[in-house]
Image 1: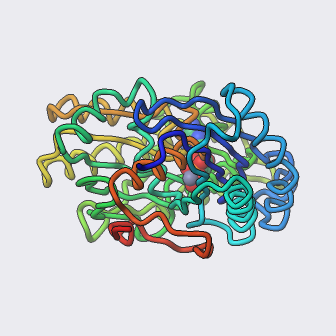
Image 2 (image 1 turned 30 degrees about the vertical axis):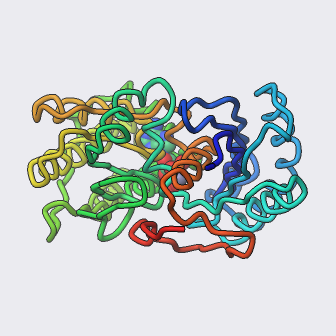
Length: 357
Ligand code: KG4
Ligand code: ZN
C-alpha cells in the first residue's frame, strides 16, 4: 500500500519548512515555514553556508512543532519525504540527511522528492485544488502549467503525475530573478518580489514605457532586456548615487515593470493554450503569489474558455506541503521515489521524472 500520511522536509534554498499531508484527501494536516530573511538580508542574496546552518538549527524544532500541530504521533506517519534537488547542495544535504535519519529511526520509507515537481503539483492541494484534481486525477485531463520561481520560468504540459513536457522556457533570467534584480536597483530587500508588488500598488503602470522581450520560440521567455532597460533608466535618473524620485518615481517604475511582466506571461500563456488546446491552466511558484500576474492570467484563461487554478499564497513560495504531496502522489502512481542511497541533485530537470519504481 502506498503511504497516505506523508511528513516532508524542504530545505532547497532559504526556507526551512516541514509539513504533513494526507495524500488521498489532498489536505494539509499541518505545516511550518521559517523564512531566513534576517540571515541573508545583509548580503543582498542567499549565502549557501548561512542557509545550511539555519536549516540545521531550525529543523528539529520545526519538525516537532508540525507533528504537534497536526495532533499526530510519529507512529501515525507513513513515510518521510525530503527535497533532494534541484537547489543549493549544502542546503539540500541538511534536509535530506535529517529526513533519512528520521526514516531510519522510525522504520518508515524515505521518499526523495524533486522541488520543481512539488511546485508543479502544488495547485492540486487543499480546497482550491478540488476542481483541478477532479479533472486531472479522476478524468486524466492534462493541464498547462506556468511555472514562475526564482530559478525557473517555463510553460509545461502536465500529462499525468511524473509526465512533463516543456513547451518553452526562459533563455536568460527567470522571472523571479528579474523581480529580485529590479528590486535591488530600487534598493528593496531580497527577495524583492513582494516588495515590488507593494510599491507598485501606489504607482501608475502606464507611466514608464518598457520594452516587451522578443524570443525565438514563441512560447519562450526573456527578461534580461527588460531588466537592462530598468537599470539604464535608474542610472539615467541617479545623481551622486541617489535616485532622483522627482524625475523617476520608483512606484511608477515598479508598477510599469510588474504590468509588463504580467502582460508578457499572459500573452505567452494564451499562445500556449492555443497551441495545445489546453482546457486547464495552472500557475505555480513564488511569483504566482503576485496578484497582478494572477489577474492577467485569469483574464486570458476566461477568454480562452480554460479553467484557471492558482495555489493559495502560502503554497506559491517554497513550502514542504507541496513536497509531501508530490512524494505521496508519485508513490501512489508507482513512480520512482528513490531510496536511502539517493544523493542530492543540485540539477534535476522535470523531464527526468517519468521513471517508474
Ligand atoms: O518558488 P520560490 O519561493 O523559490 C524558488 O524555488 O525559486 O520563488 C521565489 C521567487 C523570488 O524571486 C521572489 O522575489 C518571487 O518568487 N516572489 C514574487 C512574489 N513573491 C515571491 N515575485 C513577484 N511578486 C510576489 N508577490
Ligand atoms: Zn521553489
